[in-house]
Length: 351
Image 1 (cartoon, rainbow, N blue to C red):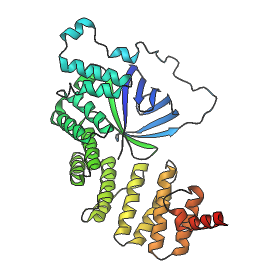
Image 2: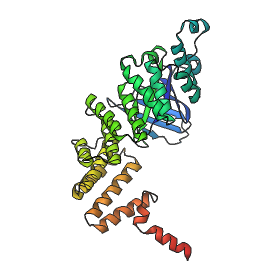
Image 3: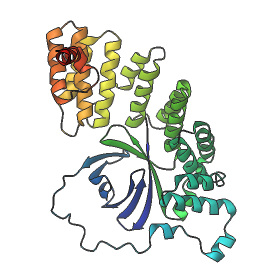
Image 4: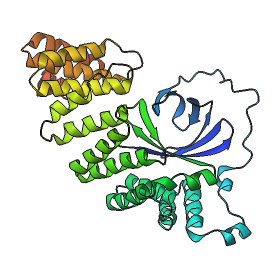
């Protein structure tokens, strides 16, 4: 469960500057629907109401100009200047708050190491600890990340105080697949998801699972939490992990790519339980809907169905699935090897 870290600075109503690892970009649009122009090209993003989920898709390189609102406001103040404290204001501002502002400004400028240095002097503030924790996590400094994030969690009632004061929107994006991300802000949900990542990076599976269970108690239907928990259960394989995954997916229908991914994990768990018929039927149902599903997810579902056919002893059907998958993605997993193509290629080179 890796993450991408975005700094999002409001410039004017409906216009936001997003700063990520790949550089800056401008977003235009109303809440829930955004259009982004940046170093990775043009992307359309549509939010799923009430979930915090966003589908992000690349837009074609058409020469036609994108129509923006006729009265789209022009940026009045450069983003970096929004985070400057005047001389007299700086004299009256507490040291930890100044460090927080300086850290945010360094983030806007893309200087993440300098930003972390400033923010480490502001971890007494919940928002400072939140940002410092995510920056430490991004650079895999797990012990620091855990310390700062726990500090933020202990002050959860004070989260977003300084972000709001200075008009900053800080968003952490967890890429569930290439096309689907879960965006979380400075709240207990975001902190617990980040702590899950910290513990996962340390191999502390029980602690990671505990964080996700806490999140489930806050919102039992949170699909991101269910998906993350299923992923960790599959990776760590505690006692009865397969039964727990099937239980997690109980009642889940194929309504979004996140739901389909959880159904995929359910199919894997069913196969682990020695129920290949159920695993095959589960993947077949998921594959009936291909619209708005990433190629990566569809490939994973096809691969899982092929494994279910193998477990059923239906070798010809399994091979047919592997052949279709190879035609679409020849480097996927061990498909070429299962089809005996690596050996053939080696023989041709010798001859």
